[in-house]
Length: 108
Length: 114
Image 1 (cartoon, one colour):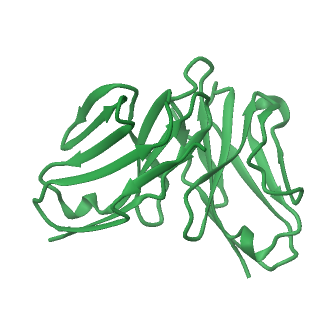
Image 2 (cartoon, helix red, strand yellow):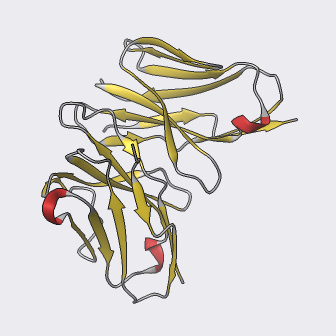
Image 3 (cartoon, chains in turn purple, orange):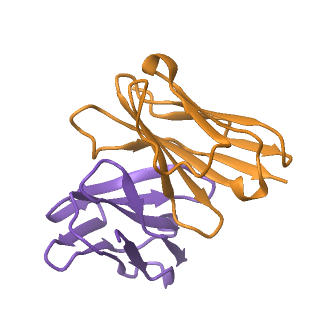
């Protein structure tokens, strides 16, 4: 069965802390997305990756194809980073399978 | 360039009523996807259009849901009659031919069935 698991489900941290959110999937994938959803807001695509590592500002996404695992890191976290972060994958086709999301709260 | 837009942003209806959600993809995007998130669950795929044709509708929950994309531009998702368990956020996404994995999401429509 094609599944995506994220951890943790909820994460609260102090401003400035280094944040890591994890995503594991059950079988081989074509590509993986990290998405962000602010309360009451739409979904924004942060990264799409199929190998290696990508960086954008304070956000870093890595993927290990052999271990079927990806991580999203946030450096120098800020209260505006508070959102739900969602991992979603393509299991060999164009439709996305989503993780349950990680609710991140950064306290000033 | 305008992004994916959805209308309405929020709809509150009573059980048994009909609601129609609309999605306008990015201009030129032939692929259009509907997803939804019901309370406490992960977002799930509903269906995929390529232009006006339904490529994959394996995620449609039942025959109370009808999706159309006449002319291959905007799409509508009708729920008739709505049930309480249909409450959730309905997202639309679009992508270009050949760039299927680069999906751009709309802001979503929050549907509340009372």
